[in-house]
Amino acid sequence: MINAVDKISSRRLFFALALPDALQQRIVQWRADNFPPEAGRPIAAANLHLTLAFLGEVSHAKAQMLQQQAGRISQQGFNVTLDDIGHWPGSGVVWLGCKNPPRGLLQLAQLLRSQAARSGCYQTPQPFHPHVSLFRGAIRPVAIPARTTNENFRVNHFSLYESVYARGRTRYNMVHSWPLTDRE
Ligand code: 3AM
Image 1 (cartoon, rainbow, N blue to C red):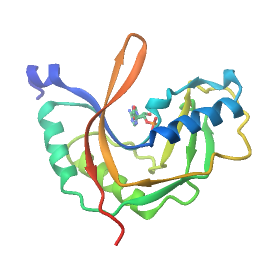
Image 2 (image 1 turned 45 degrees about the horizontal axis):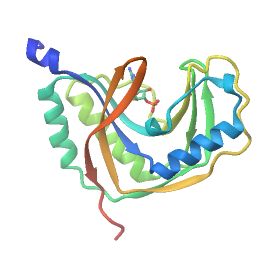
Image 3 (image 1 turned 90 degrees about the vertical axis):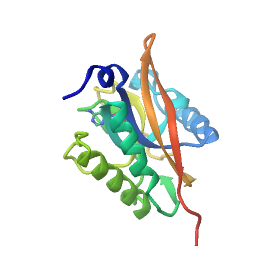
Image 4 (image 1 turned 90 degrees about the horizontal axis):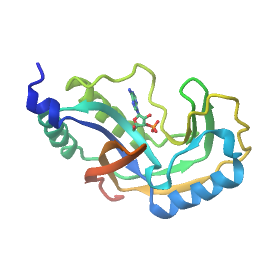
């Protein structure tokens, strides 16, 4: 049973990889150059991220436990190349992804998702498809550019984010970050 305090203090949380600021800016520029304005609702530069595990509305106590578990993860960093692009008309998302996701990324997401599931956070049965959402509300056909940004970035930490909706906008606030280990 969720007690009253937990209900009030529950937050909408997810684990994700941050994108470097400069990369966010380059993606937004590339998006403006390659998509028509009617493609969908563009996601703000600062909100571009790669979700690892969506947790949903989580009580304070459960968030503490999930953070403790995340803190015990010991994994090496990895490189992500955004060399794939696609459109999911059902969810209205246009995205950048990886043709060959690095094993470290899949391992990290798998671990966070199974920890979340064990803590009672519902996880969708669909396989994890790492992606950076570019547009939402893209429910009509979209002309997908032949080339992606082909951007590559080093991942040396992962983070827990809170999704806050206020005055018609969604903001993602970083709650905590954990380092991944250096190359051997
Ligand atoms: O932008 P992406 O797709 O990486 O789609 C939401 C977003 O991921 C996803 O969590 C991220 C931060 O909001 N999300 C939202 N609701 C969800 C749900 N019920 C969800 N993912 C799975 N199940």
